[in-house]
Image (tube, rainbow, N blue to C red):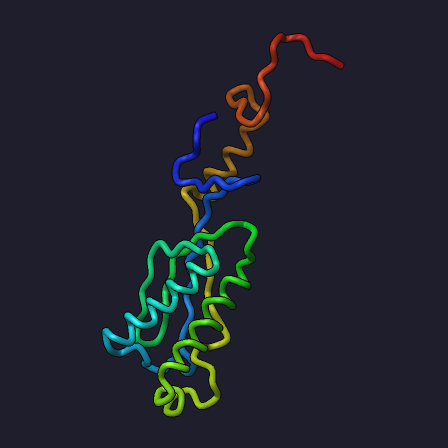
Length: 154
């Protein structure tokens, strides 16, 4: 069996999916305004990813929001991944910066409650639909065992 390009092979399953995750600061406050604060938040997010077996493929921390391109095993739920990133990063960052907490986030919430998450992969929806449609045609035998002879056993 040939390996699927860019897929992750784990015990019992193979996966190849990616998520674009975006969330904003509470009240869209401009918090990450210096290279030091940006680097600190990136470090915090990377630490959370490492602890939760999440791969950060691309990351950007903007003054009032975060963009992540991530991949994680199917054993994790998307909502739990979001909770880990937002909850953990808020707790760690605000503990390190009581002055920012007091001036901008007196309620203790660094992030807005909302977020955006989309899935993406190396195949478009149209490609997958076409692949599924062609499964029963004579053109494609993908996923079917090879028959030793043409006789069908009943």
